[in-house]
Image (cartoon, rainbow, N blue to C red; front, side):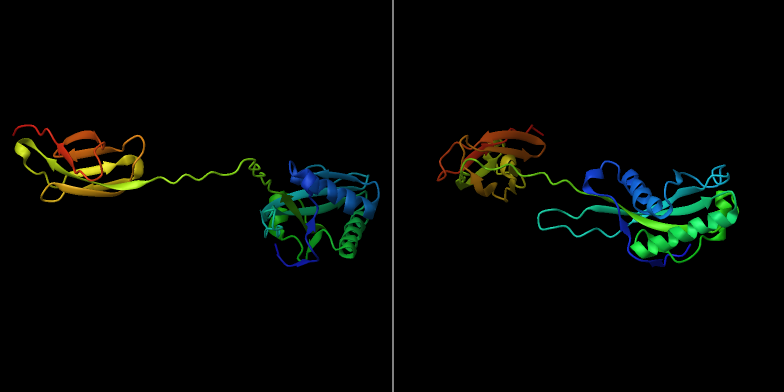
Length: 251
């Protein structure tokens, strides 16, 4: 089917119909286009060619062919853009005589052109579409209409009390990691998990952690060395290095 169109897409759904954009759009197609053009004619929605396109009474059939994403509408500085889909409909007519059905389609086409909506596709329905529907080709219209759903913005609660900012004081923690016999342990991992800080001891077993929050409570160090893990609370003054003894198992 061709994609070239005439006129503007019919933005027929409103913010009051966000719960059922499709139903609101289809009601608007009938109330704002079909009935004003043809009067109180019977209109049904559903697949064409299943016993609904024959009979003596004039009849309009509206068949949803599919939906595709549409460009988002511009939102205001306070509201985000709404979500939009473009629905494609096949419009067919039935009457006691085919010539009468043809005139119904022509009248609907002229009315859409005069009003500027719904959007009419220039190309006629392709033969494979009629084959898929299982009916003979006939005069018909393919129109487009916009489905729209507005996004709901949650209002931020008002701050009824002044915001108090508390700055956390930090300090450097230094120390020495030793094993049995006061032998320095290199490569030990020292971590302050609550602050996301970690370091490793050097060849002398020494380490320094910068920017450690002082608390209270006093920061807790997690020490891992040669398969042994232990926790140490840094309660000593900042000027004194921590002496951490790791009880390594005898080899």
